[in-house]
Image (tube, rainbow, N blue to C red; front, side):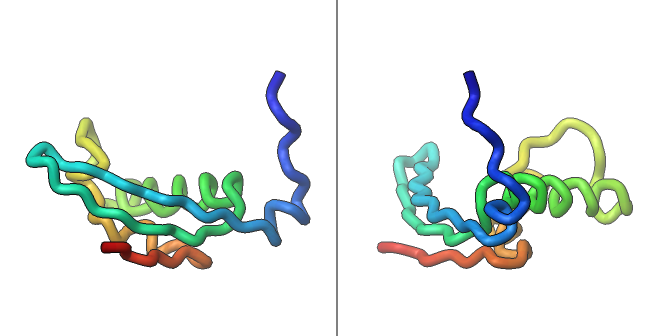
Amino acid sequence: MFPAVPNLKARSSGNATILAEPKNGSGRTVRAILHTPEGYRLTMLTAVTIVEPVLTGQRRAGFITPEGLFDPDTILQIEGVSREDLL
């Protein structure tokens, strides 16, 4: 059973903190903390941010990895998102 979806008030006023620690093929690791809107809202806003440039012809359509289509700062275009880079 899945947990209940947060109501509109919770989605509008909630927030999330995400610790990201990606590692590349050479073993270089970076760390950052993302402060974001509530998770369901972030998912919706991210989907729109990603698909809009493809639909308007600003980005090419077809098979491509997210890394090839967007840069690491794309998430920062979303209202309410900030990143704290860690050493």
